[in-house]
Length: 316
Image (cartoon, rainbow, N blue to C red):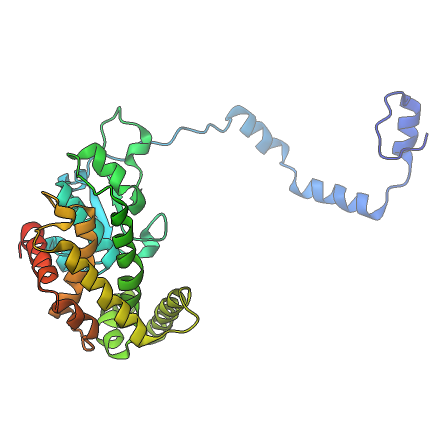
């Protein structure tokens, strides 16, 4: 009975035997040889039958870690020395969340890190302290920055955040105008890139000149690509002009108050502003082209706002 690839349940034993006696093709013989080569020898097979493979469940992480590990650790861009002293990160995004945790009163330790160490590929992230044995498994997972507000809400007294529509408008000044000017002044201003960005982001990665050159090129290209998302050309004068207007708007918003939106205590927005104002006013970073820094210094209340946060949460 011819076979077109379907099993025939009515096939007789005689027909099957006749099929088996037919000459085998080259491919069939080669397959049989391979099966013989990779088949398990009978003595070995009997041994495995006597000792079956058993898969044990994963063991818990050791609890013999130093006491410091029991405190949450925030992984940020920072030097080892500054991390040990609890000083501000040199990266605006990291500094924003570092300051927010300080405002919330969340005790934590800083760890010098880079994006490659982050589960999401972006710093910062928080590694919670050692959890009780009965805590949910998810509670020990790294917490990315976009979930830090939720983490703080469950581990610290509530921080009042502005709920007005103005909040989003002023936040956009930071996320767009000031951030764009920051990217240009740090990465695309040659003097600042060589004196600040190269020392902070490039030199620590490798001692190889070729590797450093590659990383430097990628950093500058990434900054340029980011700026070109907002405009078809990079207009330096326009970038600085828009940032200057943003600082003026923030200065008017703050007025004579200690904190933004007339808050009794600093909030996440205060931390967001501080993340840029502190770094632009920090002369120890070694700024060479200070056009953006000078625009900020003209707003005295923003300078004092930075000083208040620096003294309160970083010891001045």
